[in-house]
Length: 258
Ligand code: SF4
Figure 1 (tube, rainbow, N blue to C red):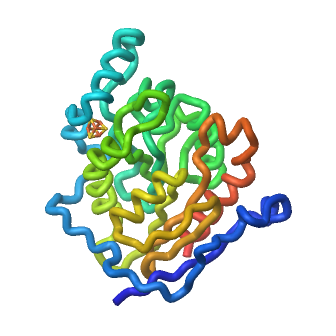
Figure 2: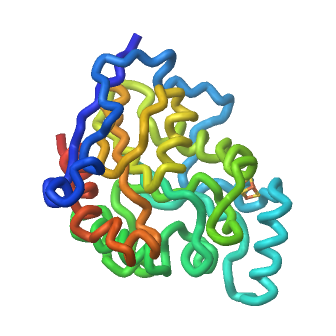
């Protein structure tokens, strides 16, 4: 049975300021998993681009109505489910909670066109994961961006039933993303607690408390990294700074280079 090993990693600049945040309290080497990354969901792997059923989905009545309201106010907005996008052969998956209204809700591409996207792409570009620091001009390299919930939720908060409804699409994206056999390293970067918990649920990993800057190795070549979500609130309050986020992306780069 495979072993979950955990590596505690933290930004030393943050450690001085807030040592409790820096250390993963649930660190427990040698934990055993009942099943690791053995998804058998009866779905074929698909390219991150080929997801017409996602775009056509109308399963969550509240979100469908919300998007119809947005469409009336902003006829030029995307206003439909937003599938993952990025490089077909990706080794870094960036997972957020749900599309933002001014970003993916407008452009149809996760983290493209809003302040969170500007924050994210600045670091992605500095570490070679994007061709441009301007999200609307960038192409992703080795990277796919997606969200747990594919539709814009009211007040940026999807309900738990909506998350569960939509996780089947994320499960398929994970199945497509994760290697079937021994290969180069893959990294899943969870932006925020919700993304972290969804990945744990879908991969049936043991529950561990979320904090910024964790690096969790689920098997030989698959790593889960965590960061606070680059939301306007987190950035404006200084909970997440560009240098903190840069350190996470730098770690992803270093893991993928090994
Ligand atoms: S949130 Fe997901 S499951 Fe719900 S309507 Fe949108 S695409 Fe479908």
